[in-house]
Image (cartoon, rainbow, N blue to C red; front, side):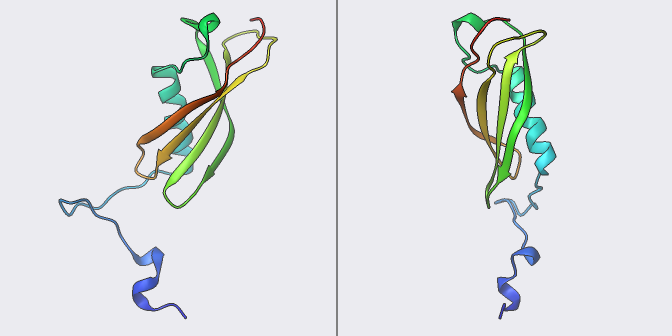
Length: 109
């Protein structure tokens, strides 16, 4: 049996100043990952320095504290190689807490 104080849905989180925290949606987390990747590119290898990249969500999940978003990365335009992957851990408040390049693109553009 769940007691009144144990229902997670009825709880609210507040900042130290007493302001209510606002949470982002999974769609907003996916967009935040793509915007972050575009604005601050990861280390995709020497062959891709200065090249505009295209990003697509290949996997997305969440746990209690974070959205985990994995993006496929490849050069924009025609690309016959294998896309790389970059993973983002985004807090429910919308802060990119960690990102890592899992695999760099390989092949020719």
